[in-house]
Image (tube, rainbow, N blue to C red; front, side, top):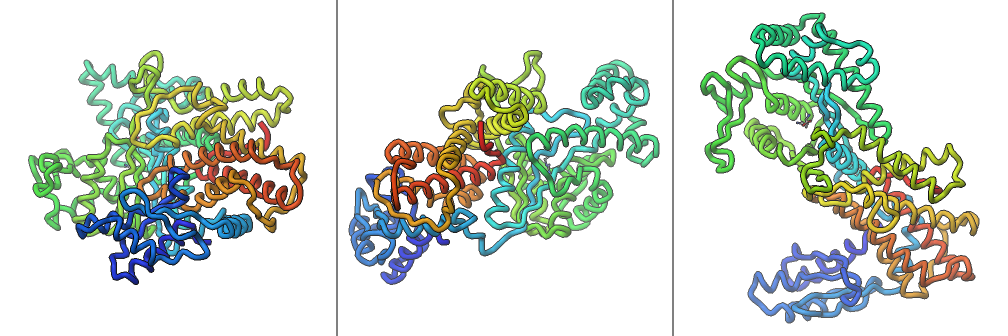
Amino acid sequence: MQTVRALLEERLRAALDALGLDSSVAEVSASTDARFGDYQTNAAMVLAKRERKNPREIGATLADAIDVSGIAAKPELAGAGFLNFRLEPAFVESAVAAMLADPRCGLDPVKNPQTIVIDFSSPNVAKPMHVGHIRSTFIGDALARIARFVGHRVITDNHIGDWGTQFGKVIWGWKNWLDAAALERDPIAELVRLYREVDAAEKNDEALRVAVREELVKLQQGDPENRAIWQKVVELSWREFEKLYALLDIRFDEQLGESFFNDRLAPICERLEQSGIARISDGALCVFFPDIPELAERPCLVRKSDGGFLYATTDLATLEFRITEWKADAIWYVTGAPQALHFQQVFEVARRMGWNVRAEHVAFGSILGENRKIMRTRSGENVQLGDVLREAIDRARQIITEKNPELPETERETVAQAVGVGALKYAELSQHRMTDYVFSWEKMLSFQGNTAPYLQNAYVRIRSIFRKAGEVDISKSTVQITDPAERTLAIKLLQFAEVVPAVLTDFRPNLLANYLYELATTFHSFYEACPVLKSEGVVRETRLAFCDLTAKVLRTGLDLLGIRCPEKM
Ligand code: ARG
């Protein structure tokens, strides 16, 4: 079904065309204040500014010309030239009825589906996933779910950091200092220990440095023993990552690590050099960008003077692969803001190579501790995702046990996981991605305010209405609005299909999170004002339909954010 916004924009465009005015300004948005109607447009103001005319005059002409019959009353001209639309009751009722019957909550799939590769999470082998990977993992997964729901073909790719100079140290350590029992207990911790101890020892031990370097060269040349150790390290790390992904309910379509592209690095460099896009400077192969002011002093290094390749080289090979093998129309890289320069360089080189794709760096800020500095553990280390995750579930279990001691043990675990993981994800996704937000257990696990537990609880409470009412077939309900609180809720519900695609415009899952919060509070006001089970006839039928539809939108919306809704909590 078409959204209210799309319908109004269509009518507005027709009016502008008929008046011979530029119809590209036909934008309508939901009003934030009910005093200004349900929807509004500033098209008259945009046109007036451009043509130096009186906005209220253009507004009045437009209000006369636009035909919104069957949708809204004739728009009102307000303020400096806004047109405010107030939806007609019969239209609202029929739109809600159509939404009730639609399993997609009113959202039509896009007409021009794109192939979108989403590169996110991408932890590094032999290192724990730290809190910086949290944002990438949660944002990337939410974007993937939303893009898929909207109708795109999505390929999620976990670009694991499984190659690099650190393996010299890890392999030397493995051969000489490995503690097998520790590896058994906590593989990543043992790998980190090896790396760190070799790294420290190497500092004042020239012979060790040489030995470590040799292990690296042997790995790069395909020495079977070193390849086998590397393989084992990758497997052990991957197994640990997978446990976290399982808890988080996150799956990847592909996980081509950096090593997958090794054979493609030398040929890419040759092509870059032959085409004149890159040139040798001090023995290294570089792409220079004299014509781009921010990059003028920052060439992109693709091959070091010792022949080694770099992060950018791998990303170039990966980017081309995604276009040729997967036919990507777009690639979204969900990675922290500090990598902005890297991606700007890579995208610019790709453009010069003629690789045609819409590549976007979906950047994000930092998570802060209560002291408003980058979050660290007490001993000053990076906070690990695994620890945060376990603590979230433990804390959720405690809260659930307090609030609902009767909940059977088996259900409690599922609920604790949904609430704990949900709280973490929602704390992330309800923020603008560039915001540095303060990590607070109390806040994210609170049952009040803009949190996952609040939304999950709203869902659970609606479901409990149906445990009393019995299951009703809502899809064919008659919708007859008799109370203003119903009308407000109806209009909020209809906006779901407008909000979801808007998330993708600037990669803002927080738009959806905040919408769901507003929906839950709007439902709350409706439920205060309108008795449901005590009402009768068509009033009861309408109200039950509103309850069910709200639950469905909450569940669908939370699912798009990667958050599960328990039936009880
Ligand atoms: N492994 C990198 C890190 O942990 C992230 C990789 C992001 N993706 C990419 N194609 N460069 O910082």
